[in-house]
Length: 200
Image 1: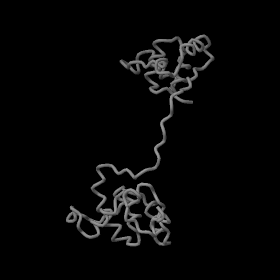
Image 2 (image 1 turned 45 degrees about the vertical axis):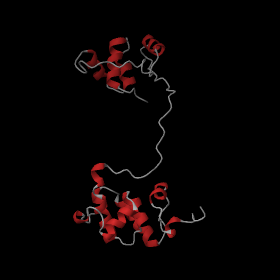
Image 3 (image 1 turned 135 degrees about the vertical axis):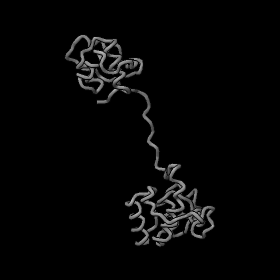
Image 4 (image 1 turned 45 degrees about the horizontal axis):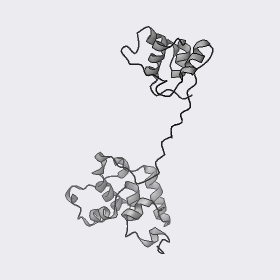
């Protein structure tokens, strides 16, 4: 069953403003009956401001009145007619700011340890660009003096499973699946990797 947005604060409000039983409040808020009793006794949630589930759209006053009249009934959450958040489509890999400085190290490791990987595969694995890969390869990267080859899995830039899958594809000579962000970043994508998009 769906729980209210702030269960404990909702329980505080229901205890203070209704004559519902502890069991009914506990059931609705997903809490233990003894915890609701402790709220009523002032032992738990002291000073917590109650959250009105009616104002929050989770209950109606009629529903509370209906359940107050019969201790055997349970509160039913009001169906929300708000639009649900849209799931974000899979886009470019997000790398936390703290790990972005590790990308050149990961590129150096992949270039050295796995030369069979194409630039497009490296781009997809660690979320970088072809110019960055070229700069690391040619030692023209602005931070070349400090780049140390380090495993991207240990750096947290990709998983071992993703790396193994890319290596398997590279060994079989299969092209990397095309992704929208690669089109925007990699204009000079190798024709063998790009598929049959040459008619655009």
